[in-house]
Length: 336
Image (tube, rainbow, N blue to C red; front, top):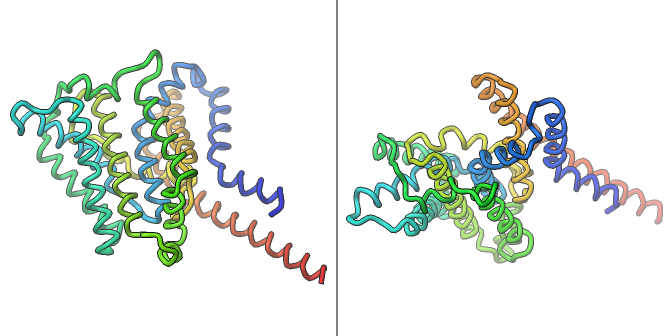
């Protein structure tokens, strides 16, 4: 493979960071107060919840599936936990135990999705859609009014700061770093990518692809519950509208970040770029005073753009590889 082709493929796979840099530079010039330190921290803080959902959706897309239950898990896991701690169980839970239980609830929902999809062969779209509707209905029934106040330790991740930096920002970057290292340098990461890229070949080679799919949905559930934990901490309460309409933005951010509808592609660092781009777009529109309805329309346009970018990226990559193969064939004929 030529150096030129390697560079073109590298640029194609990391297109999101080019878009992030361009958007930042343009807004630094055009949008008042956009490039200030406080606003950058504000972007990172307000992107933290969506960032976790983007990572959750992106990892599911890498394995070759979709998860529409993320936004409902975000509300269900902390809602169920705090109801148990404040009403159902005498004496309640220690706040630290509440955090563990919240993540555990997310993992259980993810495990439920994963088993039905990998073993029963239920369609992932229909499975996670039905679970999303079911969980949202349960939350609306169980949490008709907000649950507050929350224990300080439970709200810590979404509310507190270390110096000028919100704990949520530090936590999100740590989670992304961990998954980036796992995907690049561990056997689990290699099996995970292989399962998404070619499930049949991976199964033949000895990889338990069903188990990898189940792991993917468990991870997705835990990340969604963690996003719910940060959401609850940020607003100091739990309500039944938490996470509403966020799953499609998570889908868009994952695709912008390099995940593909075809599976087997994408990295956590790329997904982080997708989260930052969406966060900057939302922030710049607010600073420019754009009406809420137009912001909503812009989000819809971003979802459409993400799908187009995914198709263009796949097609361009295939064309580059095809041209390289043709060059090699021509060279081999000339040598003969």
